[in-house]
Length: 127
Image 1 (cartoon, rainbow, N blue to C red):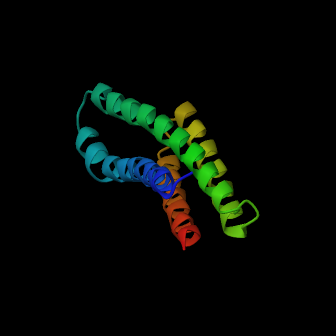
Image 2 (tube, one colour):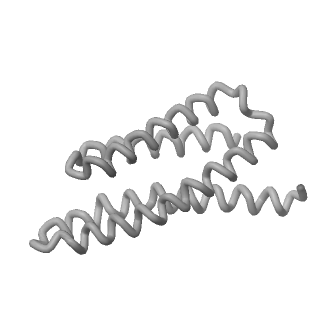
Image 3 (tube, rainbow, N blue to C red):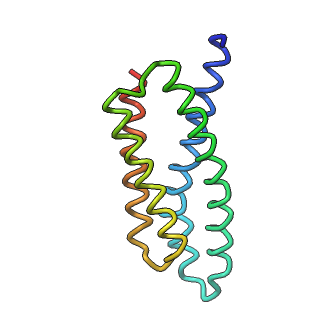
């Protein structure tokens, strides 16, 4: 693959990460506090559902581009990548748990904190 194509793969990876983590931050800081005051929770559920669909796309992009980047750098044996992948599995587990139990709001916080750790590890891998 050409360097321009690898740049596009990295760009897609970063944009998908920004959507997933940035969306969580926006929901936590702005949307949920405002919408939670509303007696009609339908809007908040609709917003969360739309973000969830976008997150599924972002996660698919992250998996495909992340695997390509790991292959390119022959990083599969790297302990930092192994920890990052373990956290990705943990986040996926918490997301599915949250889908089944949306009233457990602590799961949202755990997903966000683990997502930040994943970003940190991704930056460490990029050096």
